Image 1 (cartoon, rainbow, N blue to C red):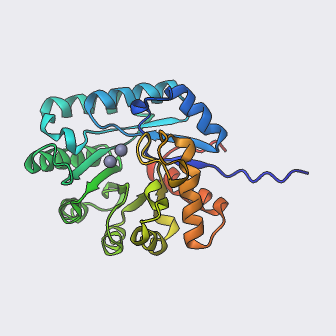
Image 2: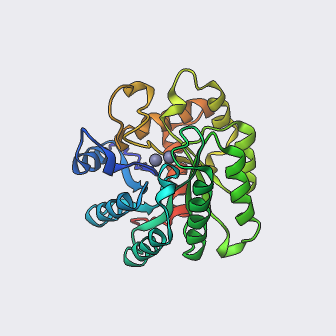
Length: 271
Ligand SMILES: [Zn+2]
Ligand SMILES: [Zn+2]
């Protein structure tokens, strides 16, 4: 008898709407062959969020998040918020989070004040609809923590703020502070880069029960595929790296991180 271990991956962060070399159809189909059962397509802008909802309507195994990236925060206003709320109401079965939102002080494409306003509004939107928030944090660890803490201490139980720091790039100390607040940490292919020594240490310290896998496709292809366009099918390299760092089987990494994603994003299970 063939012993088929039915583990699978969930890519919790892939911008199918930004792929240039692959069509979303190909990316979804090809990644299924690589063991990716579900994909979450985050929004980076209002138009991107609309696209994200379109994909989650077309593909059964694609879920969407809606959000305005800190890069586009300057365009965020009450009308954006109104449209986002409309999307949530119209796509309640497939929208699993608000995001990505947060701070990006690396590129600073929008003024800090605008980033903060858009971030806070989107956290409030998530709390209103009891959705988790996908956080983008680049060179802004302290401000990110401060803003999230403010909302976290005000909420509890079923209304508690649920957040994931996506494409985690902070220190182990910052990761531990996020864990204390009940947040999750999501790692990309950056952990496979040879110079990511500090990040590998962080992977070691964060319990598997609090980790998600994500490709952040089409960006950040893992070391094995460096130079290629990233897509959800490459998520296995991230799982492999986590397994190596923690001394686990890849099947365990797949099962636990998928379980985490099912619970956190309330993604249905087949059986
Ligand atoms: Zn991001
Ligand atoms: Zn992203």
